[in-house]
Length: 114
Image (cartoon, rainbow, N blue to C red; front, top):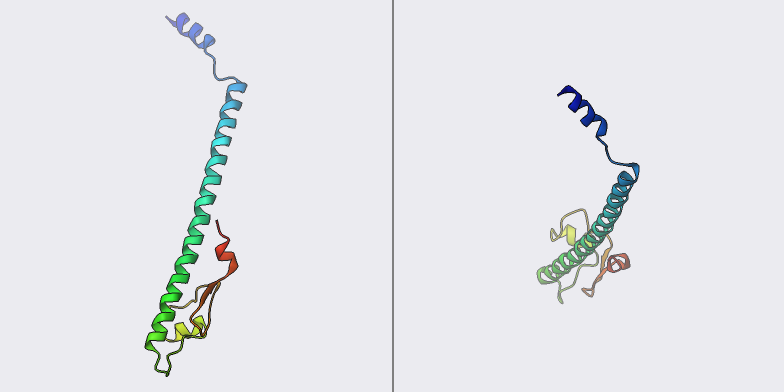
């Protein structure tokens, strides 16, 4: 019985170096695929956040116009005026500018996000 156990242990073999290297290469390829797919998701999220900020400032700009007591009503000159009128929360969204004509423009970097 003891002799059979010894011969069984002597005949055991593990993975070869080539098999281990193949597994490592496969894991590396899979992790590379995951990294590139996650970076694309993050880029789309940043673009969606930028678009949401533009829409929020546009709504605040229209609210400023509706609440304006001037005759004729006026739009806010900048984002700081919207914050002062309690239509936006501080800190101001970055990369967004407004004008007295009611136009809200995003920074070009916002529109180039993928």
